[in-house]
Image (cartoon, rainbow, N blue to C red; front, side, top):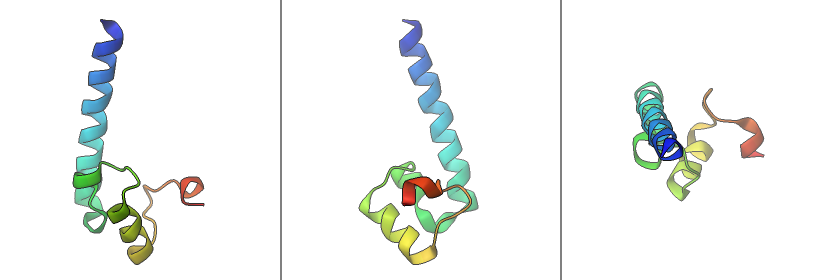
Length: 60
């Protein structure tokens, strides 16, 4: 049960973090893709460049 609760808490915290990023960096669509590497997210990175929130090691 504790693992399930921890998973829920982590998801809620991450969703809140993504909502804050969406306000700070509106061009990336964090509120939609939640930071996952979707086609739209990758297109936004190509168009606008990486934000300070992007992990450059992930981008290559």
